[in-house]
Length: 408
Image 1 (tube, rainbow, N blue to C red):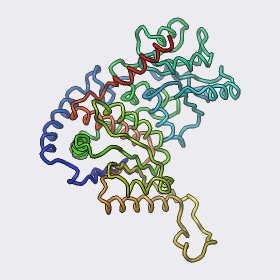
Image 2 (cartoon, rainbow, N blue to C red):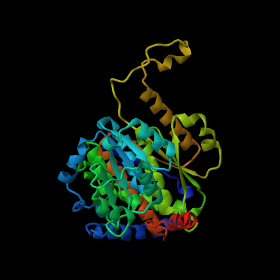
Image 3 (cartoon, one colour):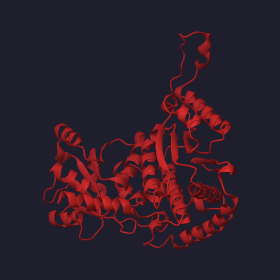
Image 4 (cartoon, helix red, strand yellow):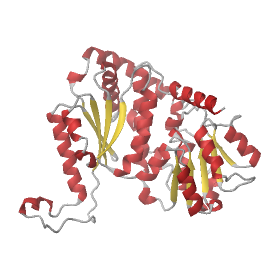
């Protein structure tokens, strides 16, 4: 177990699901990988450079301060270019005073609604694509019909090379921020991709970086090591098919969609990989719980909960249902949900189903930065231990190429 001021981490993965001999080999391999990550962390060409204390953004706050006047902001992107931003927004929404909309799919109805509801000249459009050539992003940008010479309400983030978005920014004199070419989209949230919109949300982008290296210090490295080895072991034994994110914290829903992409695209290769699925709790207690507890034992559960108690939240003071339901009196919804979380964990233990637990202790930038960095590191380490490249997505690229062939 690892405990700190923002998140509590626990693993309950029984030995019967693990091969002891394999663990010994993975232990040695993990130490080599960790040493290599730390050794090259400050290299500005390294994918984990965003975690370094020496990391420098490709923008200056003074340059984007002028865009803070916009109260309505539309983010246009796909996958890793937008999922993390949406995660930041939903996790810290109570701190954000501006209206954010996310265009993360091809949805003409959404575009028509925004055209009817808003004056597009008074909206800031943040267009993000690492390659600068993502078909869906380019298509949405063109359908919006907002491109004008010297537009002051468009920010483009892409690589700085001969790609459509960068060339457009040069031709039309639009504000452009360089996306570092060595940082893949799903690993980019702590770079310009996530921190520019976070700044526009009014958040402290430097607080996101407070706990990024927590997982390498003497107090916390044990959990990262234990998790990476056990999860690699599970990937190799082929008994498990799914990871279920059992989420009791609504503010984390979009973070889990970001995490879903991270795990699926990084580890779903060469016939390997577990399917990460998001399950909303306690809602899914009444739809999927029977299968989870009494169906095939091919699922690993990640339980997300929180320990934040607001004394000002409404309590149940009435009871029209008789003495049988007196147990609800003076309880608030958080207390009821906590009881359901504990009951689910008791059931998992009773049925000897493996699970992990992540308990949120505070909703702030530091907590979310730590969660982003932890899962990026863990996922990459597992990929390397499995002898696969966690940083590419060859199957995705093939579909992109075939799409272009069909459209041509």
